[in-house]
Image (cartoon, rainbow, N blue to C red; front, top):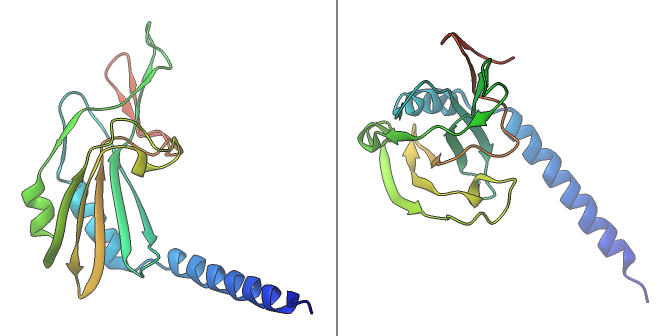
Length: 165
């Protein structure tokens, strides 16, 4: 006897769960954006200028995950025209910790060999798990932007900086 109706019910429930999770991701709470903007101030490029990017998503454990990184810089004009490069930076950990009400875990993941070219998890990153505004949160500081991240900033040969659209 076939139990295909069981499989169909499973896939319907799975689709409903995914749809619900997508709706939650779109409705990120305002505190997550405030925290991301506060943490962004802790990045200090070691040379030149850079722009902080971030992604906010709801994890499988109903914990908000905020991943921050410096976007790539593109050179406009001159012999390096069109080239993109990553920006070396330092990060103020004390500032990050001060913005979190309770820190449960703080870890560094050193991954010199990427696992995937499409995820930040393939790069080295710092991860803090804790609680802020009575909500569980994970904050990740990535050493490189995700490969699908938009360009961070354009720097013209004459030193003028431009934010890409």
